[in-house]
Structures are given as C-alpha cells and as structure tokens.
Image (cartoon, rainbow, N blue to C red):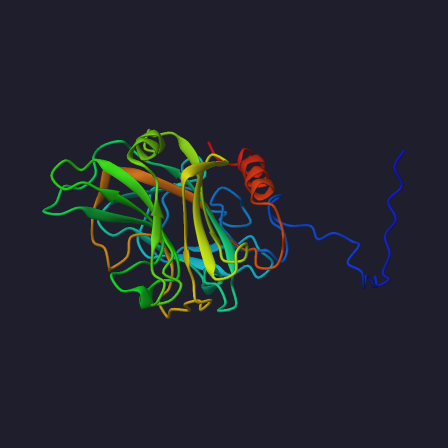
Length: 282
C-alpha cells in the first residue's frame, strides 16, 4: 500500500536539494538555454498539417515561443519537413547567447537526403539552424550544408562561429563524413564552441551520433562574443535562398546549451539527449 502525503507548506530549499522536474529528461537547468521537440505535447500539441503562425513552446522553464513562418506537413517522427523554397521557423531569442559566453553546445536532429539538392551557378549554402550571412556581424553561430554547383551533391556540413568581426571562422565535416550523414536516416548533429580550455584560443568541433569527428579547429580569439540583432531560425533565411530537395530535409529537436564555467561533460550531455530523443523521434 502506498501512502501519499500532501502538504500545503512552502518548502525552503536554499541548497537546491530538491530537483527540478523538467519537461525533457536531457534538460539541465540552467545550462540548457532552449529546446524544442515537436513530438512532445508540451512543445506542440497539434495534429495534422502545421499552419502558418503556429506556436511551438521551448521545453525549458521560460517556455519561450517559436513561430512557423510557413506551413508544414504534419510532424513526422518528431521532425518537421523542410521542402522547396524558404520554409522557416523563427526561433525565440533564447536561441541567442549572452556576450559573456565562452563555451557553448548546439544540438540538432536531422534526416538529410544524399541527392536532390539545388543546382546553381556556384556552390550553395543550405541553412539548417540559426542565422548566417556573408558578414560576421550578422551571425553568432549557425549550422548549414554546402552543396556543389551543377551536381547538387552535399559536400560539407558547416558550423559557423564568427563570434566577433575579428575572429570569424568555421568548421566543416569532411566529404566522406557528410556523405555518411546524408543517408536519409536519423542523426544527432552537435557543434561545440570552446573558448575556455586554452586562454586566447577557441576550438570548434562537430559531433555526429555522439562521436566527435575528425575536424577540430583551434584559432586565436580576442574574447569578444557577437550579439547580433538577427533572429535565429530553423530552416531557411533570407540571406540564403537555396531550395531544399523536393522530398524534403527533416529537422527537429534543436537545443542550445551555455556551458561557460560549468565543467559539464559534452559526452554526458550528448548521451542524455540521445536517450531522451529515443522516446520521441523515429
């Protein structure tokens, strides 16, 4: 027999010994700044096609709202289908980081096709998450995909982290790793910016399915962190008007983590995100 005790006494917990009950098992307060999961009813409780101006709630304690700028087919396996020209979800400002940030992690779940990408007169950048443009001042961080002119072949997943006008740069997956990623299957992609481990330097790393890939770029960093006015997005941006494949790119479960001063293991965060996602994504 179980006895349930109900009290109307307000608990005093100065040492934070009573854990928060989060809306997703991977969330760590206050490290997780924002997280959306379209298959979690706390984020999106609708069914059928997603209408323009539909709201999605961040699963973090602020419940900040994202907005569908375009219509989408029904959520499929926890992911939204981005197909054709200019599909976009405008993310809340919680997907921006404060200018005191020195280390952060961004995670995105994807299904990316091997072919069907737009052909053009020059190589094309396909925006997946956040905001990138041709000037550093407009970007804080972004994840995108480079495809080859004429063939439309995907050649590199790109993590852009300008941070400041004086320290622009990025990291890319190799062509082989990109090809393995663009197989139509479900994958966890994560990008790490680390300006804490070595004073005056920053390191950019890309992870796929919890595994750190072979590209890790260290370069000098002046310590300044860009805070652009541009609103981050999931999907297309006006700065890059390349079409998505007709059959679509599937994106979901974006999250942003400010790890500055935390000492939290990236491997532990990715493993927890992986485990939590298995209950929703397919």
